[in-house]
Length: 492
View 1 (cartoon, rainbow, N blue to C red):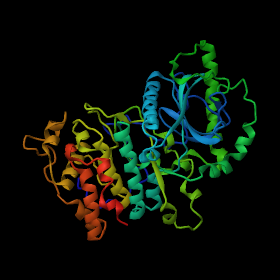
View 2: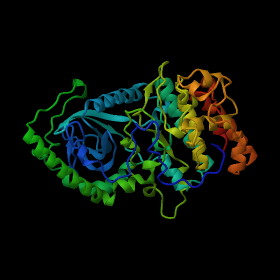
View 3: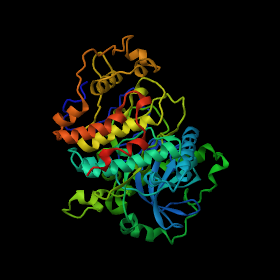
View 4: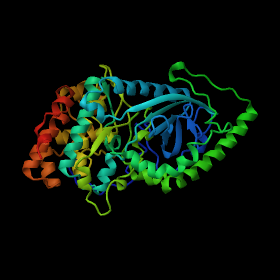
């Protein structure tokens, strides 16, 4: 319950699958998706060398998969660059979620490309339909990015990233959030280390070395008329959806073929691309957080699957800090993003980054992202979660989460105890927690100084920077535009 108690080293599988909001998508640590999902309404079967969108995109290797989609590294023969190709399951509800995500991504793309923050949000490049044996699939292509901030946290062994690097990252993420909030009218709703990715300069020079042999086998090769992907009919995305009828016997034969093809791909994905496998690329970041939010339109493999790991850009025996001094990052994964509206009350955010108004079921807005931002900065600097609630015998995670917030922020505004749909479940008429009576109050400044041995001046400066984003009353919480002016960001 105490947010300031020292944590033991976090296990690589720090994931609670038994949470009360467990509908959100999470990257799987398994090598492959369930082959049973290669069926009508499910995944589209893909092999290395398959082509999409009138032969424009050639599949190079697998990047990842999730409950809603598979993601592949592909080569764009028109733009002559690599892209991340996301192929969504064909069932209607997956399609609807993907189309809504595209609307958000298009708004990000066109709202104001001249804004500074535009370059700090990962961009959708293209989208199209692809018809295959399992139905009609929404496909999207994204710019290629590197590993996530979680990988950077791990590279520093959960001991904290140097402040100069964290400040650079923080400013860029704030610029991206300011762009989403003010220019696009969008709330990301899932800011966390996994969803901020590193942009790698001249990424093509690295990828071309890796994929040259694969592409040489396929780029000048005429597509076969017998493969399901190369012969599939391509249509503009906004023309609606239809289905392809098949006889029962054909379905049975096709299902067998698909399973055989998918099983073969499981082996191919491990052998292609210089021995890169899904597991080696994903590492433990697949199951880092307690992802108990109930947004069911999130498909986390997109972009979060690293195309290149940091080892590719850090010289042997080199100092990673020197490489990361010029780091550029981008906010990714808008699968859970929402339009900024006044009546948003549904549960959002991954547990450790969830804002108090969301926990109690009150209305939330773009300031929910700001709460997550503060928690993210703390984690980058310390390697620890600021809030890591656990259920007890007489209370659940939400109770403990609220207790940890109150212990640290030392106040309980009326908006928290009265305004939420679930406020009365957590608080009595006096504004006290119903199921947790003993609280251990401790200021954030003291946590930074005592637990993490931060010098007093540094602890004071960081406390001053984080506190406006950790304001429990959402109406008083700072916005990204304001925080960008903070003194802490300018200090070296």
